[in-house]
Amino acid sequence: MNRFVPEFFENNRKKLSKELPNSLILISANSILQKSADTPFPFRQDSNFWYLTGISEPDLILVIDTSLNRTIILMPTLNDYQKEWDGDFDIENLSKLSGIKDFESQASLTSLLKKTVVNKQNIAYLKPLDEYVQPYGFYSNPARRKLSEKILRVTKQPIDIRLEIARLRQIKQPVELEAIRQAIDVTGKSMEEVKLKLSSFHNESDINNQLTAGFYSRGAEGHGYEPIIASGANAAIIHYKKNNNIIVKNSFLLLDVGAQVDGYSADISRTWAVGKVSVREKQVHDAVMALQNDAFVMLKPGVMLRDFQEQMEKKAKQELKKLMSKYSNEKYPHGFSHFLGLD
Image (cartoon, rainbow, N blue to C red):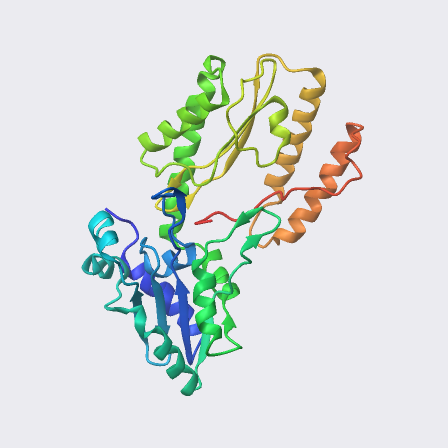
């Protein structure tokens, strides 16, 4: 049984609409991206679109008219090849998932936008990322940018509502917390399974495969993000993703992994010794444990994430000075905490 019923998405749309009276809100679904020849990468829906609809189909556009209290999904026109090889949209099922009754062709988008301008309604959208996103070094999904180009043809001043949606998503509802807790439970049990037979693994990829199997066998949808299985010096690469090196004996192994359940991800990091580590490595490990314990004491309702980060950076520099590390006076390169959810 799907824990996310249509009422969840309907309520999210109502909350957003309340923040934006006299507006036409437009949110794009993600597009499919090519992997090789005629093969795409596995599709992942835009988190904001899913949060408002529950639909995991590409190239749709959600339209919410807050003046008329009307919600529409605009559908792309599929060619014969797409219908024959990939199947057509099941509108009845999409309506059941989302609670949305009106589905129309995207051919009506331009006239809809022009009518909105004539009626002096606001046009609200998610401002697209740059095509090439610094500093991550990847290209953004083109769907939001394509919709933005159509909007900017009729108005030069659309309202960017990224902050409004972020604030809604930031506060988790009980059903979301349930999914996150299950994702954490699956992740923890799968990691414990790995730890019990740590000495039997030869390659980082062996652990990756074991975790993937553990996630799926416990009802998750695989990994919520690319896992990090980093042995030895690889652990110094913050977002190490190769996961294919021989495991270094008598050294540390870093795991940064999270299972995904109903779209919501866990995120757990653990560092384990493989064999006997050096005195220096043990000192660094103990310093990190001291920082973690301080973090657990500080994290509670009412604490601002910015203040938490500042305090933890100070404590980290104190620990680095005790270790006589050359990094004690350098800018700290990493956050100590972040939100959990669809992203």
